[in-house]
Length: 110
Image (cartoon, rainbow, N blue to C red):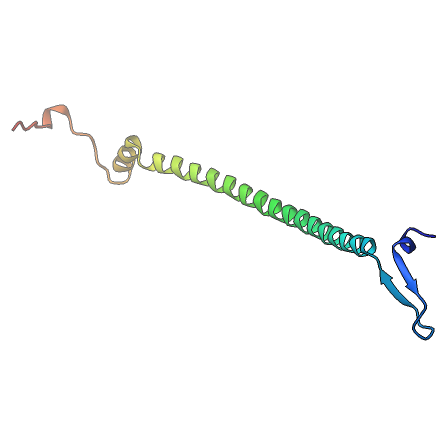
């Protein structure tokens, strides 16, 4: 007698047809097998979802690092363009402006 046939009861009463009656233990085993199958598919789905979310996280983190580096570069460039020495150099070279001698500077006191 096999393992499964211990839990399945065969009746040969109804005009030569075979009726299969499952005992309570057979029904329990089939129910647990169904639950096991659902659990296996759920685990597979969650592992796949975790893998896909990790890939999205890695791409987003890489993009964040690139944008942070670009932002730092823009901040350095902004500091360069706004520096006093840069403004003075552009004024002297392109606008032919010069720093007046100290004798020409007037100080107004209030």
